[in-house]
Image 1 (tube, rainbow, N blue to C red):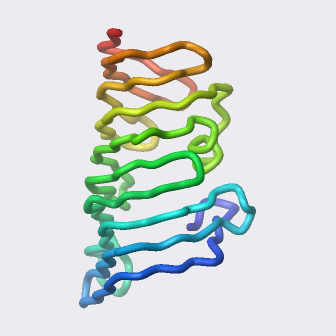
Image 2: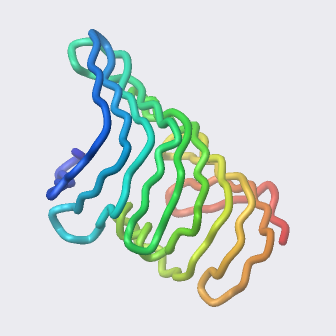
Length: 168
């Protein structure tokens, strides 16, 4: 994966499944898989489900489709369903955390959170990188606090989290 001024490199990738390429799409369905990033920070124990890169022509996709994509890391498991538009970047996805380890996910996303714990539940994520709306229900432990049926609807803007609904 490429970001401005840096790239994330994966190694030791093993997959089983099907790959189909057309004039304006690449579709992969994984029956299993594993891999690790070059820095050794994130290790994918298991991967299943579908992912497609569609539109854009000439090998350039304008949208990523996630179809019951299940990812198992060392400490976290989650299911992804939805779309990611690439130009401009926009998310519209559901994440089912089964559970996720906050520190592991923060490392995978290259984020500093200062929080720890384990959460499970279902979240809807919509928006752009500069303004993401997250809504859903979570259970688990966040930085030592027990969460039981935390209903949330928040907007995350870099450096700020504002909420329209937060109830435990």
